[in-house]
Image (cartoon, rainbow, N blue to C red):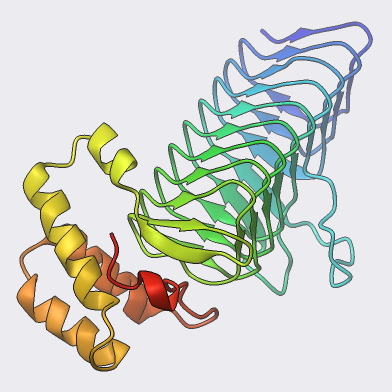
Length: 268
């Protein structure tokens, strides 16, 4: 049975699973679905066609499911889908998708969204992502698992970020960030690999060694990028992590690839 504070407003039609807590001065819309154990701490607005997975905790003044910040939105019944076991801190905003996009914004499981972070329409986020304070993701951004964002960072619309990547604080990312990569600066440039993250998550010394070697070859001065990609793919064909980088680079179509600065091309 759900526990609803007397000052909260839960509109008819909302679906609240067992163990849901709706705290003081929250507003829950008629199309909202809250999974088992979801907790709205206080002063939360959850509206639109929004679902939140079990055991997610939403802290005060977060606004989830409000209309997208796009002139293309005309009131269509698009979705915001938030997974399980997420921590959503104060003043976080997440918006549903557009009909002209995916039609939904999706957030995976076990993510942390620190105060003031923003997830725009049609974003697709994986699992175990950490987004620090005041980070902004533009529309249609794809973020894979285990990505970390430093505070005040920003990501341009349609950019892709691969697994285990790191976006440094205050970085402005305009393009695609390779898996395991690390970017800094405004505008952001590739500044090597997220070696700290790889070590923390248990990647072997052999895997890290190969990924570093592949990085140096990919962003060396000799030949074209396509030639270097082909050489790395042949040399490291049996290394799943290196091939993940190569496949990511080959699949890009909307944004250019984030590259090292010329004087940093061989650093890892």
